[in-house]
Each structure stands twice: as C-alpha cells, then as structure tokens.
Amino acid sequence: MGAFILSKIFNSILTLFGVSSLVFLIFSVLPGDPAQMMLDQNEGSVQLEILKKKYGFDLPIHQQYLYYLNDLSPLSIHSNKISHFTYFSPEEQSGFPLLKLQQYQMVLKWPYLRTSYQKQGKPVSEVIAETLPNTFILALASICIAIAVGLFLGILAMRYKDTLWDQIILFGSTLGMSVPSFLSAILFSWLFGYVFHSWTQLNMTGSLFEIDDFGMGRRIQWKNLILPSIVLGIRPIAVITQLIRSSLLEVLSQEYIKTAYAKGLSTTQVLYKHALKNALNPVITALSGWFASMLAGAVFVEYIFGWKGLGKEIVTALNFLDIPVLMGAVLTIACLFILINILVDLVYTLLDPQVKLN
Image 1 (cartoon, rainbow, N blue to C red):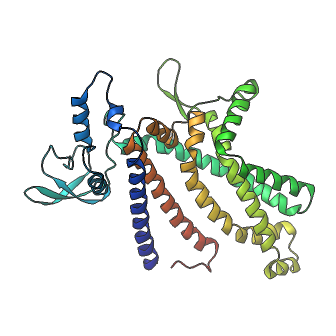
Image 2: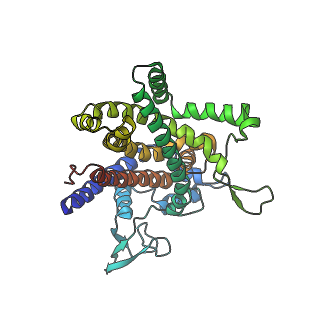
Image 3: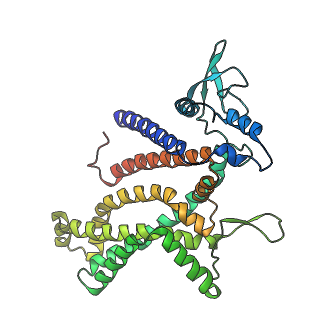
C-alpha cells in the first residue's frame, strides 16, 4: 500500500509538471496581446507598458516560465521588493515565510494560480471555485444517466443476442459514439427547447441558478440540467452499452457460471448475483475516463446551453486571452483526472480481491 501511494504521488507530480509546461508553451505562442486586450480604447502606450510590467509580459519567455512554475510550487522563492513581479503578497496568496534573506524569502504556500486579466484582478482560484461545482453537477448527472441507461441497454442486448433488438441497440450505440457532442447539443437545444417547447417546457439555454424576474435573488432551475446532461451522457451510454454486452457474454461462458446453473439458480439470479459484478470491471475503467473527460468535454455543451460552468468559462477566457484562467482550468481538470484514476484503482480491489495494489 505504501509503495502504491508513493508511486502515485511521484507519477502525479510528473504528470502535473508535464501538463503545466505544455499548457504554458501552448498559450505563450497564441496570437494576440493580453495586455492590449485589457486596455480601454482611450488608453495609450504608457498604460500598456505599465500593464506589461505588472503581469510580467515584458520578461523573456524562459523567465516567465520559471516564475510560473514558482507560483505553482508549494515551496517557492519570492523577492522582498514590493515592485518586483515575484513579490509575495499575503493578501493574494495563502502561505507563510519559512526563511527570510536580505533580498529573497522562501515561502510555503498553496499553489498560486494568479489573477484573472478580465475580471478586475479576481483570483483564478475563486473563478474556478464558482464554476467547477456547476460542471461537476452536470458531469455527475450525465454519468448517472449513462450508467442507468447503459446497463439496461447492455443487459437487454445480451439477453436478446443476435436478434432485432440486439441489432437496433448496437446500431444506436455506434451512432451515439459517432455524433459529436456539439452537434447533439445544437440538435437537442433546437428540438426540445424550441420546436417542442410547448410540450417539454424546457429552455434552449439556462444555468442551474438564475436570477428571478424581480431581481430578488437566485433560484435553482433543475429543468435546465435535463438537456445538457442527456447530451453529455450520449457517448458514455453508447460505450457502457457495448462494454456491458461484450463483458457479460464473456463472463457467462466461464465455468463458475455453469456451476451456478447446475445448482439450480435461475438466469436472473446468475446474471445479477454472479455475472454482473465481474462484468463491471471494464465498465468502471471506462467510467473513470469518461467522468474525467466530461469535465473537459463539457466545454462546447456548456457554451451552447449557456450553462455557467468551467467549460463556458474556458471559452470566455479564450475569447479574451485570459491566460491565467485558461491555465488554471486545465490544471484543475488534470488534477481531477489523477484523483479519479486513483479512486478507480481502489474500487478495483473492492470488486475483485485478486487485484493487488502495487
């Protein structure tokens, strides 16, 4: 167990380092000037130089990269000069000095994601804290729909193997994996939010919380969750359906299943008490990847449905070259990938005692 934890920590650090480096490289070569985007039309070159100095745009790329890693590192080195770019501000960063020298100090802190360029200096951590819960709710609702529908269709296809029902389900699952999420989002939004709105009473766009017409406060709108969660769950439904079908067919051909039948158990008892549990391993592997990818793949779905989550925030940040928000969002998604994969490894040991952590 100890070796497993150390291995996961080491691999996680390497993964985050690689992701942060790649993200910085990609966004550093994007066309456009973030400082110019932050200026009003009436402001001139003097204000532009002040902004570049404030956010470190005037520094060489390699120096910006090192300062970026320094901000992300829990153990970092900062200048004691208030005017310096690396000055540690207790108001903006959570931490405390470990060692103070004449010009520099070593600080133990939470990873600092810097501040947004477009939200009046709002910390990126606050932006993510406001939007990530909405994306998490959307992804959770989608995966619940995918599990329920996928298990039902997979078992149905297995029970009626090589029949018309089996062919229809396999065709539908293949179609579900082929259609891009953004196209499904546009079709569902138009059909059920506009064409059939009088029947469904669903909106084309909307978020989980909305301001009421009188401006008296926010109200939760659960119906706005229905369409985006279904759209986001279409592809996982298709994957789970095919995985359950093929996995059950493989499990049901094993010797212990024949023994269960020989003891007089019915098909339903054999299926739900013995076969289904062992057939879930590949499904859990797929779910771990799909749940994490939903957090990243929700970008277009959230944008089309107007869902105020992390995905919509990423699109907005791209439009305005809000680099800190973009990099913070990508790193957050990477951390969630890592955590979910670790949890899946632990769940494996519960479902299959033969699996050992190493």
